[in-house]
Image (cartoon, rainbow, N blue to C red; front, top):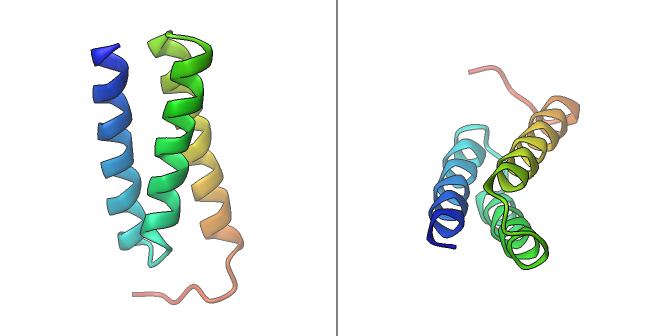
Length: 74
């Protein structure tokens, strides 16, 4: 359980920093990561499933960033 919590916190920090870097809503992506961690830790205690879920959420974030209309080059 402690490893699942550590992975969840690390992924939430990763999502916060990535969203800030990409000029997206960092708190929304952090909440999505924490929510995914809570749901998956309640349904299955597998760290592999949690990592796959977080990776899928990161893919969703990447896809949402590409589809945005207000992207500006740096």
